[in-house]
Image 1 (cartoon, one colour):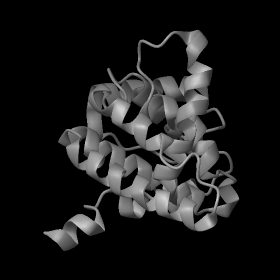
Image 2 (cartoon, helix red, strand yellow; image 1 turned 180 degrees about the horizontal axis):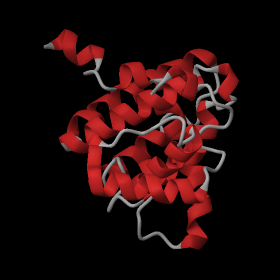
Image 3 (cartoon, helix red, strand yellow; image 1 turned 180 degrees about the vertical axis):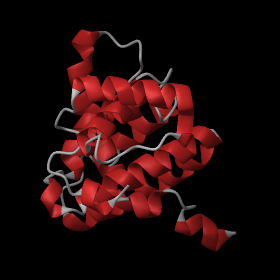
Length: 187
């Protein structure tokens, strides 16, 4: 989370050192959150790659299999829109629908999704990182959306289909984990 690490070029894209990653992974497994990650030993790339490894090993996508179909339907909202005001209107609808789905996530998945999405958004705010929401969306689509049992031959097409949704979530990270404005007003 340190700003100097978030601005590293290609964070989450560039590989870490395999032996340091193995050592760090073992430390995290044995010591848990109490482990002190020494920045003189482990690079930001090592830490980022180990985080991705842990997230890929989750038994289901972050957005949970229970809600994947709803996410896919939200993703399709406004695909036919062409006028700027129409595109903006559908973006607001997508955000509201996603906000409601975030509220339905189990608490651990909701917290992890929130922290990860906000972290990715902070990375896109660092020009030196050269990481855009689209790039990070492609990298993290399997973690957010893809069923762990998907056939490898289908993985690329599913990533291509879902990466824009992850990109949208990263761009809207500051608003994504609040109740929709309309709902708050109605209540």
